[in-house]
Amino acid sequence: MRFRLQTINNICGRLGIINEIERLPTFQMETPNLLFYTNGGCIPHLTHDVILMLTSDVLPLQIPLDNIYHATEAIIKLDVSVNTFIGLPEYLSFCTLQDPTTTVKQGYHKENVATIWSKHGKQFITKARHMELMESLKPDMYISLCDGDTNINSSKKRILNSARTTNEAFRYCYDQHVSSPTLCKKALIAPIEGGYDLTTRELCAKYLSNFPVVGYLIDGLYSDGASVHKIPFHSVEKIIDHTLKYIPVERLRIIQGAWEPQSILKMIKLGVDLFDTSFPCLNAENGCALVFNFNVENLFSENVQLVNLYHSKNENNIWKKELNNKNEYKSNSCVSNRDNKLNENNKISDGVQFKNNVNDEQNNTSKKNFVSPYSISLYDTKYFDDFTPIIENCLCLTCRKHTKAYVHHLLITKELLGMVLLMIHNLHHYMEFFRYIREHLRRNIGKCD
Image (cartoon, rainbow, N blue to C red):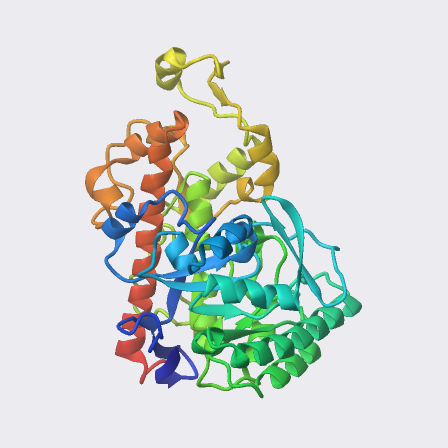
């Protein structure tokens, strides 16, 4: 695999291209761009046929080890790659360690061991075990074993242990990588840890910059995946900027997590190349459709705001109300009369109350608390008789064929199609956002101010 910079500007970002994938010789992807988040090897709610309706592009898949670990035994026995196992052999795969949409359980540390939480519970992954898994999964890109269990509140001791464990693990993984006939053809990504400590970040980046890897993952900035969008950019700006100063400019830079679009723009200005789709996925999981406007001039100007097309201040009040009453759905009289036909599982008392599966509620607490000022909640009763698309002139399947009222109906009746349509719209909108970023960079790379 090769990453090549096309243009670079210290003020508004850089354009690059990823190609020469050993398994996918025709694959080519421009950056800045997205890794498509998967859960258990699947893009949430979307089948392969639906993905093809969304885009004909060959997608780069982000495959967290913790949510596919339960299938590794079967993959090893079948002796197939992870791409073949999940039925998407034509797509690029990037194997990471932790799911960026969930909360990392803290405090489970062992010497030279990483902890992941799979469907079968806590799993301790040693350096040797990690490389055995990568040898079996055969992803096109993968990160070395790392300890990213740090956030803004982590102690100095925890940060130092995280960086030391990660660097030691990387040295072992690198040696195994270059000596393996299978893995030496793949792309190894080096994780840079150090929490919010500039000195530790610098030492870690300097150490890893000595190795000829394809790129770097800036890790260890958060523990709760669903609250990443609440992290103010100014709290991570200095950390990211300082880290990037000590890694080679010609190599790929990756950041995972559900960062808000405004922060994404600022990270691109700093020189980050790849992100993921956890932000649109988390919005869809909570019944929210992305509606922020990105078609603006001077996209990378300090004063530019990506505004909500539905007046974000009013929508924020609705989201906060829903957050405080997340198990209760209040409907107007029209909805109440219609929903008298619902079964006994949906009890009506001045409205409709939906009981979520207890296990799902416990396992997805952080996801249920996801609130975004860049979207609208289609659970809101005001969309009950709104027969317009989510966004006028949006070319996604959802907006071309369906209305807000229909998606609202699907959500409150718990029809699976509701999440499918939301995921289609959100991914399309987010992909268009990044396409516009690249076009804007191409037009203005020489005159950013």
